[in-house]
Length: 257
Image 1: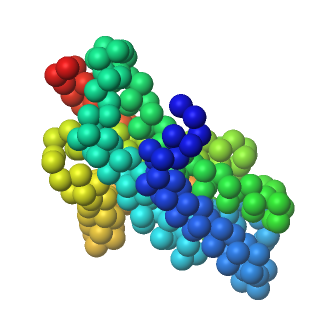
Image 2 (image 1 turned 90 degrees about the vertical axis):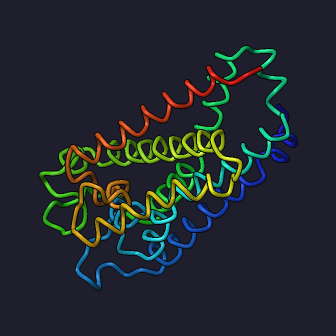
């Protein structure tokens, strides 16, 4: 597929990526270039200053609050419209159900992955160009607590932890995109299919804030600066990913030619 054709098909995906990059650049300006950490007794450090370092900055809060909405919008509406117009029909006939389902699912997943991974990676790279890559200090009240999943890796190999977390967030975003496509196969209202994943996500965030149930606070779990509070958060995300892939495969097998 040539670049112009890709752009014409994935206009909404590009808008989602642009919104994510916009928030990342906004944070870089306000939270990195214009922020004076030493005034608050916090040492200069790229690992706690970047977009995923904490939810303290408003840009970080908003990015992780609309996280799934960016991923859903990126693929849901486009997939629904293309499916309705039978854009994928010729590919399904030529490839066969199994190969068509696998390749289309990977494509949807990859777009969702990039929508989140690109802004995060860009912000971290820009932050590294300004802030020193000092090892984070566990005595500073920014970063995962010692008993949280990945805390030892964060304080011993912060670069590996950060890159791994960007990939982890990208995988979750890819799963959201694929889940939205699954809903599009079940609903004629593609706008509703895009809103449902975010509605579930926001409901979990609200409930966790009301009752202090950190195990379902996904916006905090997806933020590297907070990390996974327990194995339950990790298991929830893994089960969600596996279930979504299973549903996509089942729908592909049942789809009529």
